[in-house]
Amino acid sequence: MSGTYGFIGLGLIGGSLAKSLKRVQPDCRIIAYTRTADATEQAKKEGVLDEAASSLTDPLFSECGMLFLCAPVSTNAKALKLMKDILSPDCLITDVGSVKTGMHKAVEELGLGSRFIGGHPMTGSEKSGYSASTDHLFENAYYILTPTESVPGEWVERYRRLVASFLAIPLILTYQEHDYITAAVSHLPHVIASSLVNTVHNLDNSEEHMKMIAAGGFKDITRIASSSPEMWEQICVDNHENISRVMDEFIRLMMEARDNMNKGNAVYIHKMFADSGEYRSTFTDRSLGSIKKVHRIYCDVVDEAGAIATIATILSVNGISIKNIGIVHNREFEEGALSIEFYTGEQADRAAAVLRQHRYRVWET
Image 1: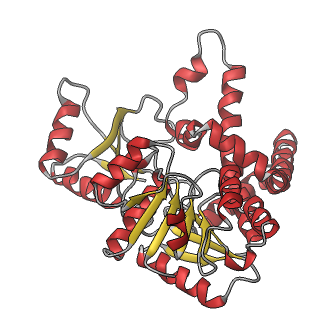
Image 2: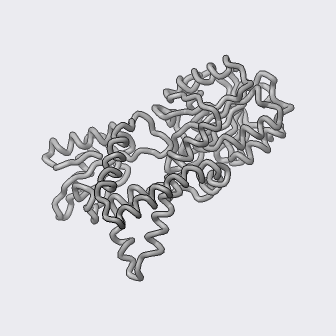
């Protein structure tokens, strides 16, 4: 791989990859084609983009040692079909999609299998577009690589080292493994969250009491239901076989739990919660993962004017930025009347320590 990188798309992921490359390889050259003029201009102004390609078939792409496909899967496949004869035989091709099967099949059909390594950085942001991109988006996040069987091993190792230079955690899987795993830990949870929200919507009364009380735990476990419907439409269609497979097991467990509750089988119910709690406690917080962790603390406050402003001022004086703050009205599953979210775990830990120094009662999640 040379020091020239090509990009199709400079959104959140593409822009963050370009910025990360400039951080670890300041002298690298970045060429990009994007439909968004604002992204192109901003990237040029920031010194991230060296040259803007006029089209997918711009001869500039022949100079790339690595090409990042950062558009939707269907767009990437069409782009690659147009670009295949322009790219250098030594150009490594990769993508950033959350479903790999379709792209791998398209690459094989184009005869480019020996030059392709699928990529999936398992991180993201509530915001989208180049303006939301950063040079540290991938830090401590898993970055999955799905090499084809025919791609040279030294290319895989070079890509692995590049990912590690972003301070991400490279993980090499087959594309089949990737799609099955993400169906279970990322795709199905989004389907479940949306179904839970729709359940409350369908069963609520005209006064919307369910909606009124749906805070705390319910709001947390359904947070991902607010994700982009366009993106999840494509993911669910593209990875439907794997999602359906893991959904079958989830439905089986739901029916089993329902039947045992109806039978009054307390032993089964207790074991269900004990087993899940024990297994969940072994999960690591090391990676951002595919579902971004929420950094939150809860704090007891007195119900008087200026109480929230006082806490906000204390945190601000100590250089701690608040992402979101609000009163917890449904405290069945939470401690503390005030919920405060932060951008990082380090900020949440510092906030908890500072507030305790000011004699507030604080609970950390």
